Length: 215
Image (cartoon, rainbow, N blue to C red):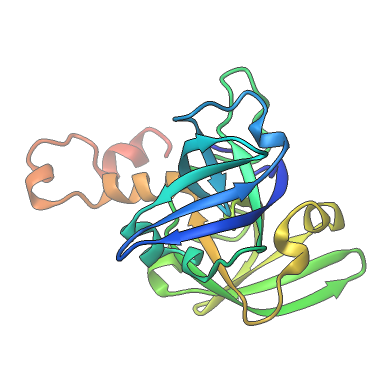
């Protein structure tokens, strides 16, 4: 599990592509401290397992499903990426629950400044937008951000200069693709409220039950 608080900006050192997968080698410093083979690191919001370490870099396998559902296919050597190690049990929870499982890809359609804030408007498919709510949380390329506005076609976030400067948001331009992960809590609530026919016969959690107890 991650929090969406980026620890450092790394860079793609090498990409070895297979027919339906790839192996990424990423240059880094901070996230390598205490990291062992088998540990998880979020790369632009995607949870990857470290398969090799050495020489100021780590490697990770990227599966077919990940390439299909994320903006990772567009990476190239030298590309800067957001990095975050999995949260330790005794760590501070500075952002929100981020699983590192990307829901889809969005496209930045507008960037504007508002005094000190920087606004990013991102278009996304309805299957992603249904879980995006105003004042809720969303991870963009692994960065925990608060949703400021939502429409039927897009959503907007307002980032402080520090967040932009410490993440690859500083390099994003209009038209760029970004990885999106919506708040996982909403997905579980929807599953409970709309179970499959098979689950309806066994589950005691209903809309009426949740309403009765204040949910």
